[in-house]
Length: 99
Image (cartoon, rainbow, N blue to C red; front, side, top):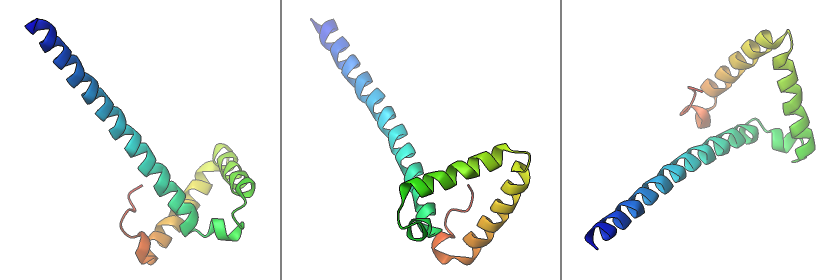
């Protein structure tokens, strides 16, 4: 009887730990997605496209194609420099410039 109770306790604790691990990973992913969405808002993309999801998605696909092309490294360097400059000049974005 004691072994069964101890085993049940162990399994319940393990399940709670597994769930916590899953929840932590899910929260990390959610935070990451929110931060990326925030960049879209900060860059005024939502406003400039009048919140047209197809336009925003199309622009992101165009960026992905550009990055995959022979001009990808040049585009990445230009965009990174422009982004770093914007992060440094905008006081609302100074906190996280390490990504």
